[in-house]
Amino acid sequence: MATTAEKYGDVVVLSVESEFSGDTISQFRRVAEEQTTPENLWFVLDFEKAVSMDSNALDSLLWFRDRVETNTGLVKVCGLDETCSKIFELTRFDRKFEIFDNVTDAIKSYE
Image (tube, rainbow, N blue to C red; front, side, top):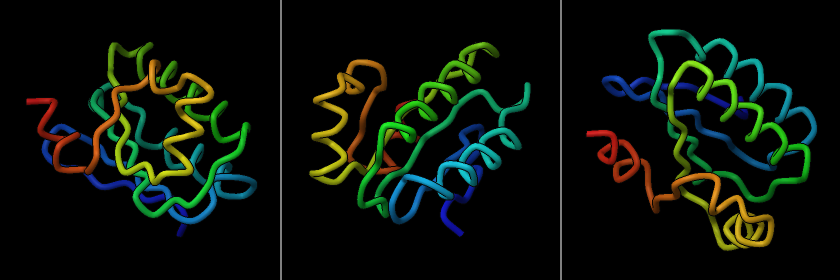
C-alpha cells in the first residue's frame, strides 16, 4: 500500500511510500478523503519512504491542505529526503508547509 493512515492521539499521520506520482496520487487522495473528518483536524504527511514526487503530487498536497484548512485544521510535513526537500524549496512549498525532520517531532509540535 502506497499511502497509509495512523492516528496518534489527535494527530493523523499519512505516510506516502515509493514515488508520489500516478496511481500513488489517486490512492493518497482516497485515503486523505477518508481521514478528513470534523474530528480529525491535525495531520502530518510523512514522506520518509518517498523517493520522488511530481507536479501532480504537489497539486494534491495543496488540495489536501485546503481541504483540511476549510475545517480549521492544519497539515505539517516530515521526512523529506534530499530530492523531495529540493523540490519543496524550488516550488516554495517550504513556505506553504511547516517541515520537520521526523514524525515524532512533527507530532510533538501539535502539543
